[in-house]
Length: 389
Image 1 (cartoon, rainbow, N blue to C red):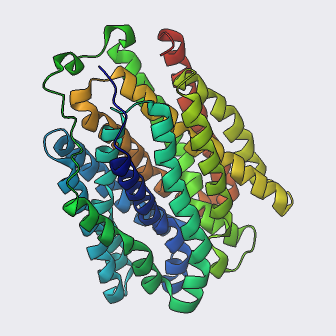
Image 2 (image 1 turned 90 degrees about the vertical axis):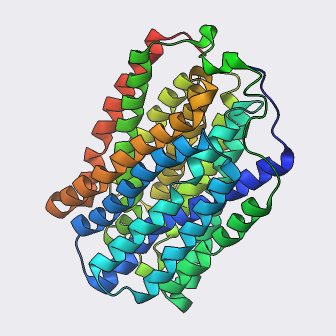
């Protein structure tokens, strides 16, 4: 397949969409301590909210990925952004745990649309590593800005109005995609029938591909537990006031932006699988360190390294999948990976929330290292089986 350099205006619009989508996605964990303060529920109940949210994303990501392979992605993206904003208005009417849980799940329907469509578009582009690096860094920049303004907004406006303000850019992105005349479908796909099959030079066995999915699934299962409860960790363990719940995530996303830019560039020159395995070597000690009674500066550095290693692995993952899967099912390919991550997010917050209630949040963080190691073992087998791509 002849790779094409993406049109600049379309690429910028996709990156802006990623930024807005990431803000809305990561807003949910930041809201948990504030909702818990209002309703007084346990870690398990906090995990259940994330479980329902992730279940919806799992189901609708698969639907979005399938639609992205069949129809014009621009209209699908527009629909997703509009559907993200609408349920946030319902938060002003919610007063019970069940109402808030259902509303957050509805927000997940809109959020599930963007990533499968946007990633499928970028997978066809020139220099996938750099493209995915900027794509993920746009998401990181959006989250970083959101975490910086989250505390002053919540302190002055409350969490409901803050949620609406932070989600409102989705409305403008929805209009931008709806009114744009740029097509997100690959125009030459019919003229290039060879793209319907995996290039023989990049061919891998089905077992290796499945093992890759399993390995990444286990890794995301462990990482999700830690990322989801970092805001609660900052309050319950490090003693920060609830209004400063976004303090620790700021440093995580500083590391994430550096990680995706650096690793995205490296993916165009080195094996994506080896990059992922190298990043695990950085992440596991960083996770363990934050569970120790160390100075605040050490925790901050560890969070930066965690963000670098965890989010930095996403461009490598996406580049590798783009090289070994056929273009005609690229939307389903990325939707499957997103759904797999969502599957981990369904059970991970619930399981580790239960462990946090039983043995404390520190112990639950340490247990989260185990699935990361299992996933790394699976990826190590894949790395040995397939030649460098």
